[in-house]
Amino acid sequence: MDIFLLIIGFLLIIIGLAGSLLPVLPGPLASWVGLLLLYLTKTISTDWTFLGVTFVIAILITIIDNFIPAIGTKKFGGSKFGVTGAIVGLVVGLFFGPFGIVLGPFIGAFIGELLNDSKDVNKALKAAFGSFIGFLASTLLKFIAALIFAGLFIAKFWEYKAAFFTF
Image 1: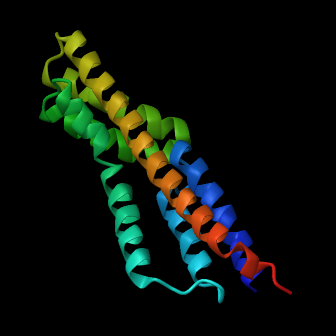
Image 2 (image 1 turned 90 degrees about the vertical axis):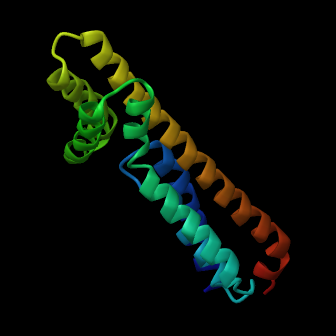
């Protein structure tokens, strides 16, 4: 059973790494479930503090991932209309798969800024670009978290590797 949990946990770590780059797959949360499965083996003693802290980190990253494009819009000079547009664009973009998740906040911020001031297309483009930069920042954040979780998984496995393969 330990080998089964180890394999499924490792697959979830890989899915978490891929999911941090592909919006369709879960990112850090999948990696965290991989860590959980590793700690549920009989070989490794369960460290609930470690699992709790990493779970909180995974949840926080998942939550703020949805707001970073709006923050990017604001940082690049977007108004409340642009920020609201980026958030609405993200929600609408969820229904259109990966491209919708990438383009939704950009288009939403652009439309929001045009609704605010239809004559200033450059400001609208700048705010939309900010939402795209925010998307890239959130992707990088998710990837770093998933990479750290993968490193923790491998380190803990390496520490106990002999115990897993004792027959």
